Image 1 (tube, helix red, strand yellow):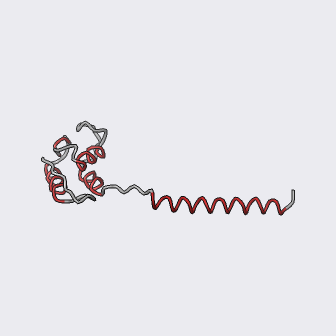
Image 2 (tube, one colour):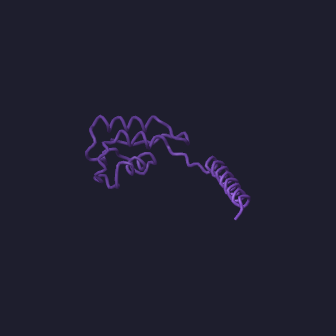
Length: 107
């Protein structure tokens, strides 16, 4: 085995790695999934017990359903405090999503 073959193999691997890295960088820009910021904000306002009392596997599931309008009442969360219910209701009723629409929820 001579040194030229080894250097050629290493250079080839660096070129292939660089091209694949560039391809991944471009793909990440075009294939990016944008999340609704309201889901994160509502999840922060929920108690975070992940108890499942609302019928969802955790607080994230309830936050997603509230933001999507699939759940219409914040009171589905059993351990939530009254001031947090009011805060979530006001936030969702007044904050538009990426589509420009707000979600109407009740206590």
